[in-house]
Length: 121
View 1 (spheres, rainbow, N blue to C red):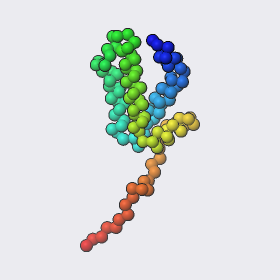
View 2: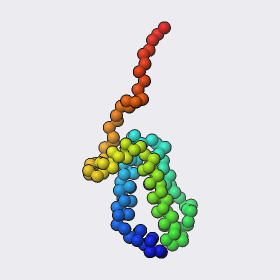
View 3: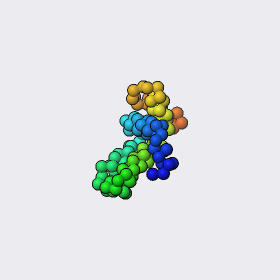
View 4: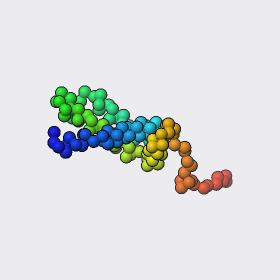
């Protein structure tokens, strides 16, 4: 292992960042404002982990596990980035303030309202 890789793995901030992303992802999975298609990303990542097929077989020491870890990290980061920015910001703030999970309050869209009148005639 190179010196750069060793120092990257040894940083306590990396584990803290990974755990905070995981907490955020778990909250976003429960959020009704996140589209179902986006919620499929972590589910598919989980299926990859339990699947017997891997890019690098787990029988190869260290590389097989790093392969699985990298897929989890990529899937987690992709999910968080695809989620609506308002939902991510709301739950990041809630985590920072130590609030328990509660869904975002739905706000009526003001820019998508069509004013119309029905006439019979």
